[in-house]
Length: 112
Image (cartoon, rainbow, N blue to C red; front, side, top):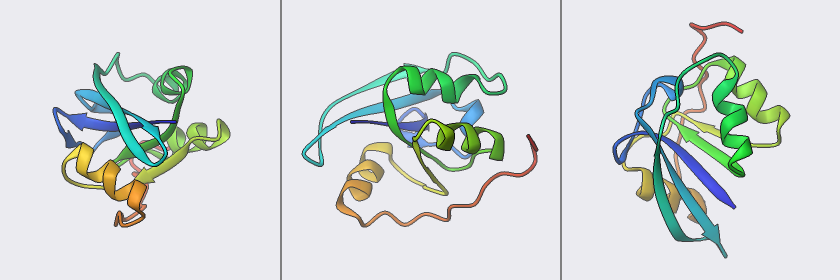
């Protein structure tokens, strides 16, 4: 499985679509076995959820995200975790351990 974290460097960003990069974590047996950072290829409506799906991402973690992106991720069977804060790797480890606290609130300023 792959987990993507919308980030500014190593930290989770507040806004998914305008993040600087995505930290991608490769998971086996609930452990991180590899990670990489890829630059955000650009913010266009509907593009990033499809882009990350094409990369094989199964979970997306972000500080905030619009409802349109959330809907596309869910249609593709990708789990959405929003309202997360802090270091990307630490957050993924908490997610894997079942101890991640997040708000789950959706950014409504974009509409659909």
